[in-house]
Image (cartoon, rainbow, N blue to C red; front, top):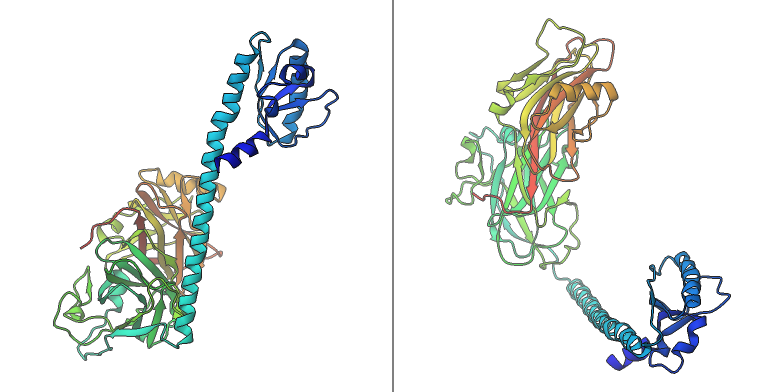
Length: 488
């Protein structure tokens, strides 16, 4: 390889000189490295040349080089070439240094670069071979009609007459379920729902590894896509790597509760469903679910009617959290309006874990919850509805601003310019009526670096705001990081 590089270097001109100094280089041991910029050189054209340095032995040669080198700037790919004046008396010493520069250092760099390029080509071929082997393996499975996805575990639904239902629990907290199978090869799962609301709302399902807290995937599914039976959730590829324990976490949004089914009572507490809030139905009862496996690392084939994940959480550690009552109860009125109302426009409904923000005919009604948003938060969502059958429509929005900022000033900036400050996040305005619940989401491109204040805003959309009791509830936040979270 080194001899080949030497030959290639021998044909590449690395030193620029004026044609006026040509006689100084004739017969020298660096003659093959010189590109002579001839008299009458008027265009930026180089052939087999990449000058690293320009040298001159005479005043005329130096002046000629300065004129010729200025033309090389138009090439764009040749950096500025330094010009060095040489002593014609000690030409042999100068030639030795130039040859060491051009052939020694550059030769080693070229050899190193060629070695890396060769190894990269080998790795590319190996990768292509590996992918071809994977495709051949998948084709072999399909050709032999082997099941690409097979059911390996099932908890059938069971309705106990004493059940209260866990729908409300999903709306205010979450329910967790450990899967009693190894993660290796798990390609999807199914959840049984005994009822699905017809109004708007979403079922949120997250899958993670228990041992590390690392997320696998998250599904945010509108109620309209669910059925009162088995609902299948798929992974893009079956889980590979080391065998670990998988954990499901389920929550829901919307004004009506979704009917997630429970299974028959079991003897072990570890694989019973559990929640952060106590509930009598979760006494040694698992969720009704099924688990499916396939070939580890391979995309499940022929998995019909499966719901694909909304987000892939590989390498991220996801925590789903809600705003506690103590935090919501500290909401402060930061409205920006010339009207002084005779009633309280912003207040907290303790028994419903909700905020009421009544709009006024002009200006913006707003409530602020200090430091409600935790560092690492990547998304925020809540439900809004006019909580009165005769209530006039209104517009609602959310504003996230840096912690301890002047909340009223942030709202005033939005009211004046129609846009939030660069340091804040604005959800945009959504119209809300008494007929349909609206789900409002803020998806951030990057997790927030520090705590932030949450502001709930409302404004009028018609001339009347009669009975516009805007109620916001179901606050759901998701935070993520690349570091392991505490695992219970």
